[in-house]
Image 1 (cartoon, rainbow, N blue to C red):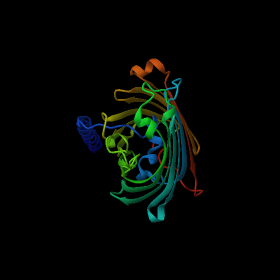
Image 2: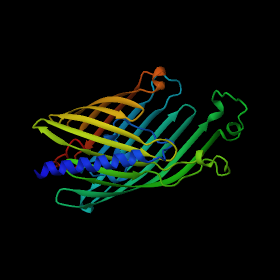
Image 3: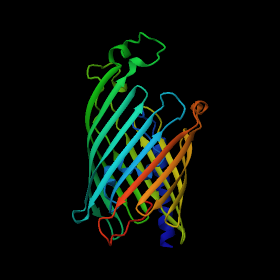
Image 4: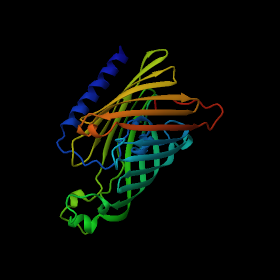
Length: 316
């Protein structure tokens, strides 16, 4: 009875939070890349996730968005995390290369987390992220409707080194997690001497909220609903709803829905300490008339630091 009440309260809270988020009128200008398999790449946005799985791990994701569309984005991400359980801390780094036609971003950030117990079965992790984004823009090479566009001619080709830092919190237990993160707090301007278009020529703060709950349906089957929400000034709130099943602690099958944008599916397999995943999503906007979808490949390797160490639950 207590378990049913707990699940009911959790669902009610999640629903209220969701309605609050979707009711926010201020949207966002998306600058950070999005992923279909967020659940295996949380550290790239939330530094508090660093080391919480209890084992050192390296995770890589390659994403090819809007396949067959000329100049479409492609993203490569690499994260490495190591826990130091005796001090309740974790450390690591995350690397990103995002290429979008004549515009690219290279990012490198160091990550640190500190964990405290909130009960016998739950912990709260606080994270700090510090590093830089390196931007390269060659916008003068674009095919333009107005070739004499004054802004692009004067400011379209540039490189920028933008140091930044971010924060995050991550609360988790054996069968759930919930997190909030702001990966970049500083709103660096792309052009310091430009004031007339200030809002469109700077880094915007991205607010990430994510959570998931694992429900044991049978001795061999687990159901995991989850959500990842992104907010930033300039466009509507984005929310990814994720529904997946884990079979025999080894095989994942899931589906994803991104509000007003796309639907997708993924499959993952755990082979000892290696996890491999593949996803496909398709936009249901007008852009779908020009592309055959987005592909994403994920690979994670976990290090066993002790011969007796037991890996944490595969869902996290």
